[in-house]
Amino acid sequence: FFTDKIKSLMLTFLIGAPFVALLLKIIKMGGEYFYVYVWAFMFVFSVVMMTIVPVFIMPLFNKYEPLSDGELKTRIYELAGKLNYPLKKLFVMDGSKRSSHSNAFMFGFGNNKRIVLFDTLMEQVSDDEILAILGHELGHWKLGHTLTNFCVTQVYFGAAFYFFSQCYTSRDLYAAFGFDNPSSSIPTVIALMLFFQTLWAPVDKILSFILTIFSRHCEFAADRFSVDLGMSQMLQSGLCKIHLENLGAMCPDKFYSMYHYSHPPLVERLSAMMALDKKKA
Image (tube, rainbow, N blue to C red):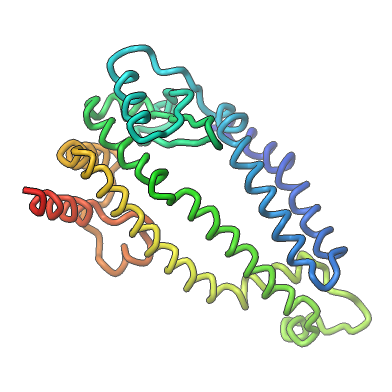
């Protein structure tokens, strides 16, 4: 616990501090169209972080080992090949080091893709269920969800900083919060905090709700993709097992989950898959 805290603090200073300093510098020196430079900076930073986080940062907190040769490894590579997913490396992560939470994820650019399985996932579900869960995850890639989410995030950053640029020089806005000294300029960090915590906050709530709806749509689509691969029963049983192990809410309030849950509740996902099975029968 304490080791993780120390590592997180060090990463905050090593990455977070230069990031904030450079962001403030771009806003100050970017002129009228600084939001364009900020957007470009955020784009580059996002790509860099997507590259270094799984390769350099995550191994600081967990151990990654190649999946041992065997039937499971062979079947995963066969599934990836069937879907034209350029899988290069397959790892097992010691997720049990911190909790019984189980998961699987993919990362990598171009033809250098990698898949990571939590060791807890391998203990909690069968090989067939692992294949079905990976069928779901590969569905996100095959259906373009990963790229779409990245593009949506970049549009969000661009829109947010464009509207910030429209308020950045507004003396009336700062005066409303007590910064009414005409002889002194408002620190950029204060301007950012006022904008994102007041004017942008209600907009962010609406956009977050729209993105949550889109995320739930993607989850149903990925489930459908796995079902189309003939893995419906294994995906259903695998999801039930990991939800039980992860202590996930099986059937939360419909409206609460609609706003707060990026993934549909398990009952809704199972119902959707059962309905697809009936159509195929």
